[in-house]
Length: 192
Image (cartoon, rainbow, N blue to C red):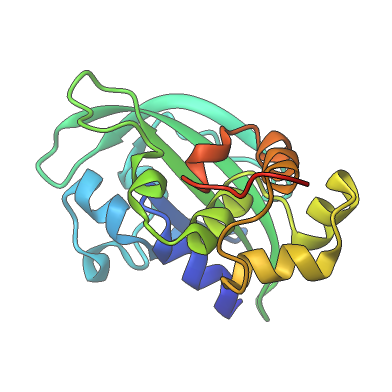
């Protein structure tokens, strides 16, 4: 769970972690990007019912993944058009409540930045790789299996022990993540 919270806070995409129980669906945790989008402070959001923030929220089984276009009600009562992506997590607590992650994309005409600008502004290639893998929900084991690159090499790239991979390695990883090589590594080594 600690690694999840680190990624949750590193990514500058508005996200909230919700707790879904039989009685209610409440906000368990938010990141700074969501606070900027909504105008609320983290302390105000913790424990708040999701129905107070999202118009036409589709209550559902917390084991599902879905996307939805809806309206987010800000702290100033402004309506912000958003695209939300609901992702169930395998975490549950003693009350048998389940947890899910909601990722927001600002669809209003006032959106100032594209959602992935934050990843592009990170200068450390190992952090960019971790962020893209988290965004695409790909583990190091899955990446190794999909690209035929050793798990050891993937780990070294993610931990910053290899700063510039060779071109083939970079292209295989970027291809699996569906991004340009330069989105992760501005420079790569020539050769095999």
